[in-house]
Image (tube, rainbow, N blue to C red; front, side, top):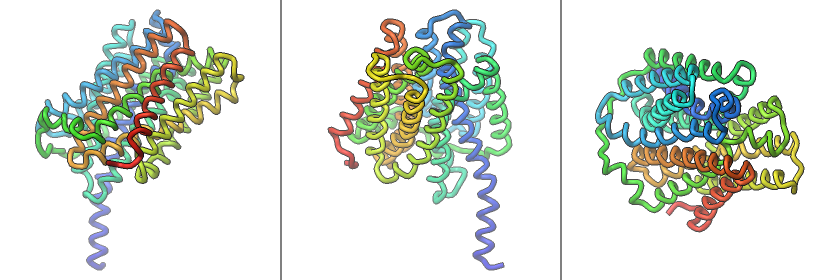
Amino acid sequence: MSSAGHQIGAETSVAAPAWLAVGSLAISTFASVTCEFLPVGLLTNIAASLNVSEGTAGLMVTLPGVSAALAGPVLLTASGRLDRRAVLLVLSALLVLSNVFAALAPNLATMLFARVLLGLCVGGFWTFAPSATGHLVPSAMQPKAMSYILAGISVATVAGVPAGALLGNFAGWRIAFAVSAVLAGAVLVLQLKVLPALPAARAISPRELLEPFTRLSARLGLVVTFFVVAGHFAGYTYLRPMFQQLFGLTGDAVVSLLLIYGTAGFVGTLVAGRLVARNARAVALLAAAVIAGVLFTSVLVGEGWLDGGLITAGVASLVWGAAFGLVPLSMTGWMLEALPQAQESGQAMLVTFFQLAISLGALLGGTVFDAQGIVSTLQLGGASCLIAVAVIAATGLTRR
């Protein structure tokens, strides 16, 4: 065999376990973010079971977002030079525990405690997993490895709701969390076997976390992230009541629509990878504008200007899912372009703003939902997305 053949064979033998380790990280990020959004598709059922209003039940989305927002930067600085393998394994164990507590929760307080634990996992995985790829694959393969992990996050943001709704519809919401606990346990076992030592190159100081705020492009990216994600989740958290109250659909039809939403989001995520490489800002603009359009169109249905029904709801699910599938990758691409020399700090702040936006969007949406109903909630979400559109349009589509 030639020397080139030996080299290719060596790369293959090294790459196989490395890619398995990357896969375990992608699954862990997928599992944690999927669990974060499980309550959206189960909101009505959980609220009834725990004897709380649907708006109050929205705290199940709000609290993990707050916890995740704090977890990213806090864990990044507190972990210092601790081996990232140990950090990731602890996070995987917490993911199992949080789902067990949720599945057995006798009341809202226990459920919210479980959701706070989950937030630590989400923020931690999202912060540490992408940078861990530098220890797993050669530098030439790192962009590909990072794309897999980010795709896991993106797919989870749109798959969690239909997955939870489908399981909950057939077996009950507690079973949905129990299945999540089993999945998390399998991920933990896999990581124990395949993750090598992941030593930290250096400790990150609190001052370095402020680097994104020193650059205009990064600041704009964080602002856009906040408004588009907050607007999305103001409406998305109450997706099930929207389909039932505005479009007049039954539970079985809602589950089907959520599956359409998830499938469209998966396709949007696949398309986003190619589009973001060309122009991340343009992709973010498109996503924000389309989400705003869907929300305001649904308002017209609620006010009687458009007919509801299954077909209209199906189109809304398809378009909305595809649009939000573009968001995580487009904003990650934006921040990577803005901070090429401070990617960990940029990622930590992106996680913080993304999760804060989820929390505040769900919280404000729940407040408006309880006080004024679903139409006003959708108007709030649409207005927030339009602010993101205005920011991008005012600052241009090219990197500065």
